[in-house]
Length: 254
Length: 67
Image (tube, rainbow over all chains, first blue to last red; front, side, top):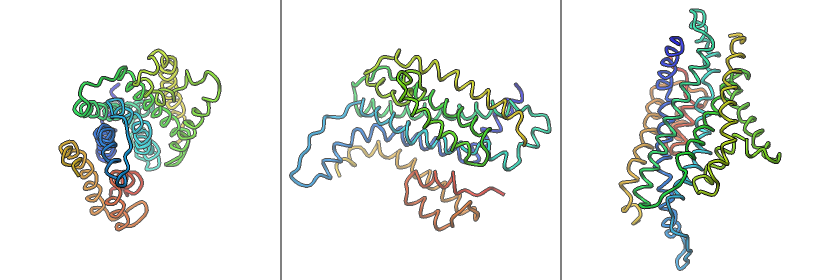
């Protein structure tokens, strides 16, 4: 346990020093504030840019539009930035050889993997929490009185999918070599999961559904319970991937 | 632009956040002469021109190692 906390602290300090923390917090802050504003201002902006005399009628935006922006942005740009920023977290240290010293001094190998996952998960949780909080505050001001149902669970699903992707990234980084090998493998894994949806019935259990259907959840188009199977698959899958990462990393030549 | 006047209070923190990212990246560019690829001039243009995306790309791909 001591190894774990020492390495976790070192890892978090490194994120601050290498601007990873700044990028993620800034990006998710910007998203959090942009989502409601885009929803609110789109009709005005369109009206401004329309050639004279032309009028189009757009339904009055609601809080749901604001959250639609949140889920769209987090799912696309947010997750991409997250993976990009963390892509070199393991490979960078292996290629620079900074781990050798620590490992020969007795740092346990599983502590490296588990602490790295813990640190990434912590930063991701803060980022997505911050973004959701800002969207919530702005939405409450800009769209007073509008409620959105099942919101907390929808945000949780989004968070869980991010946590799953980080586990994929870490496992992929232990297997693949090079700075971008892990990222490439993660991309392939996501494509594979998306393709899996062709199989009838797979959608229900697919971790991708957690992100892709979060908007339907917030719009109340589906009930919470529809995503329970996907949650039940994703949590053990993420833990399993971390287990694989530990096993592979133990045998890895550094 | 009535829209800007009406919502400036909401837009201000957004602009500040963008600015902080840009300035941090610029300071780093000026302090470090080595980049993984590209030149100083290229990174300055990228960071200033592309809001948010520019600084991210610089820190993820362009930033050289500290000595």
